[in-house]
Image (tube, rainbow, N blue to C red):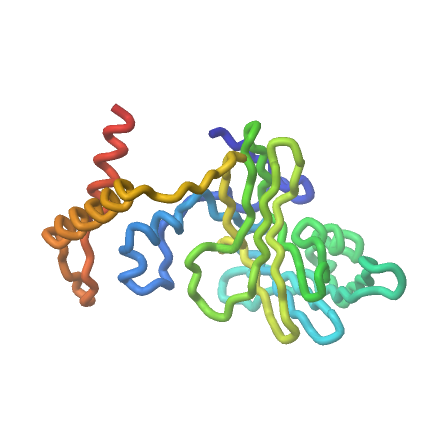
Length: 266
């Protein structure tokens, strides 16, 4: 299935390409070496923000639905980060969905003014306080799928580092709807979200729109399932080994996976 990548039109050319990744450095060794966890990690693609490697977006959520958003740049050479802009966003009086944005600081030496700071903020974030505490972080690329395929936007799978801010999951028919990539974080007062150019903000999966029918297993189905389990675990035990850190692993699942794929591609 072919997916077309459209750059973030508010900030084209900035940000890493989506990429699969089966590694999670924060997982214990047994989790990293578990093939089914690795396969979930690399399911489709990690998505990155439209930031360059030296840019950082810091978002603090305060009481009364106040978001304090600061963008910084690391100048390198051991020098302290430069604050490019600082903006406060809070709901405005009147109709729901209105908001008040106040630029509290802008670094004019970087070529920014208040209007450019707000344009840059719009390239990076969306849907602030929808719902209360929510904020959407935009991706560096949008996705166009083939007919009959959807895009699922969700958090990074098996990311166990704490603290975690929940991310809402959405499934969108991106074969006809021109969706701008965003990952909606649900923040609580006191939460701080740090977004950097080198770290993923979420993960996308591509799924066909097919009807799934659930059918009860027959006695023959159940017996075949049990037999396959017994055969698998008996053979797996012959390939087990202990890693230097004491984890017990086996490559039997990967071996079976490779055999089936080679047969399917023959």
